[in-house]
View 1 (cartoon, each protein chain N blue to C red):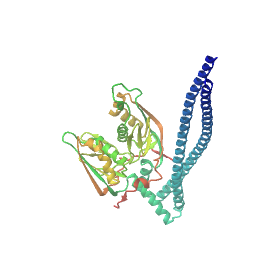
View 2 (view 1 turned 90 degrees about the vertical axis):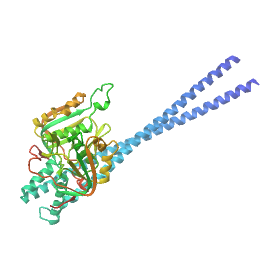
View 3 (view 1 turned 60 degrees about the vertical axis):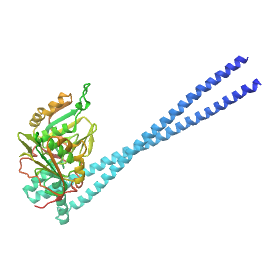
View 4 (view 1 turned 90 degrees about the horizontal axis):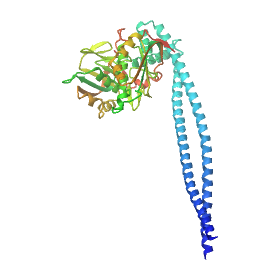
Length: 241
Length: 230
């Protein structure tokens, strides 16, 4: 009687062992297959992304060339009109409003959140807010800045600066810290106005990094929406004088 | 003999148990690795879709510009259609720059000194920024058009806008979808709620608001430091 009982036990043990081995084999094979196929897919997708990026860059260049061509034709046309006011206004539109890239002397301001936060004080005191940027821009405009960009985004008449979590939205695009504000204008005047402003003193008190540098040559690109102005004036109807 | 056999059985059973638990762990791990890979794939797929959308938008813009430029090429020859198109583009740029008087539906926000506090430059800046963020296409403060380099800066009893002095009340006009503008201004814990504690705020929607063009007297817009780069 004792022999069969131990046989049953062995029987059950080996059934279990067989099941375990089969299960193991299946799972290992599956995993191998899945990894192989997803690696293949990922590679295809990565290639596709690289290709798309290249095409997008090419399109951007082609668009820029066309805009430059258009500006040339407009410039020629305006020159032929012999109308001083028209030419002056065209200068304002292009240079001041941001429809072309510009270059000139000015200052660069770099702002970054405080590296260390003091315990017991709210962390929001040690980071840069949208209103800080707004005040500095206003300071620059008052001091006679002629063109301004924040992280490369040209400031145009309806440029907003709003905060969205740890980032700031400018011209519908989102940027994280550090914020780099570039301004073209008389460098000494701009430097003086910003470095002695209450805002900068306040920021420095909270260990926020403020770095102001004068420069002979600052380059600011044109407004990112320069070729789709329709979008920004869709609700406006011109009133004749 | 019996003891030896039982011992052997025990060892086999223990081994089996250990194997089972190892097995269980390994299968679980495989599964979680597989799902991680899938997630990465998802992200790549999303990126592809995003780039494809961007590409088709740029393509559209490119084709439109190409077409425009074909017409533009005839300007020199004096083609009237081409000149008209050029004038149209010029007008759009002028409207965007704030050099044309415009009208449209929008909102009028009036800020006036409160009992204990005056209207500060920051108050006006905040309202103007909020309006911009809600899609305003043209803004004026006391009929002074807000252009790219317009400052709003307190100086003694006055607030300077485009180099001119102004005093309260400040009438801020903006053109865009009036409901949108009102909603974002009146947001709970939003800008108007904050301002109302100190100054008088009045908001009025309107179907037709006229915003005057920027008056260029040659002093408030200067471009002498700017060299164009194409």
